[in-house]
Length: 112
Ligand code: DGP
Image (tube, rainbow, N blue to C red; front, side, top):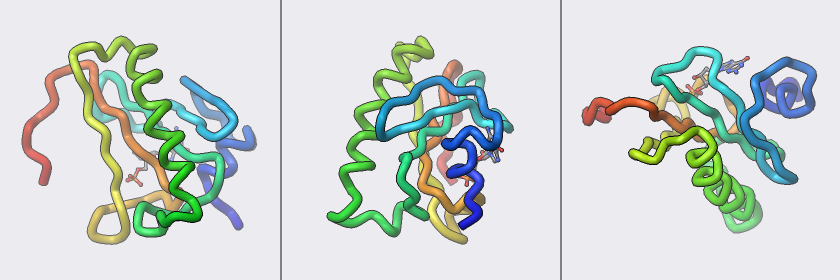
């Protein structure tokens, strides 16, 4: 399987790492939409949010445990946004589950 984010996790493609543990890898988005734009991905390949079920949801829990740690590290004490794009209508471009952390400025309140 040729998955971009699996290759980034393995270090085959360079990335700017901001956090890593046994379950989670987080790195800076190549095309930042805010002063802080970090992608948080599970080290297990899950294609999208729609594929989350009771067999793999522990990976998602690990991601949401990492998010506040990353936010603290990135000094997002004034808040931040967590986004997941899922599937065609959600404009998901990389088919490996990931959550965007956006912050470092007041974000627009418009979601869509
Ligand atoms: P999404 O649209 O939710 O699937 O977001 C995918 C994000 O991945 C998008 O914001 C750009 C980012 N991205 C794509 N390719 C690379 C890459 O090679 N390196 C990094 N750091 N980010 C990437």
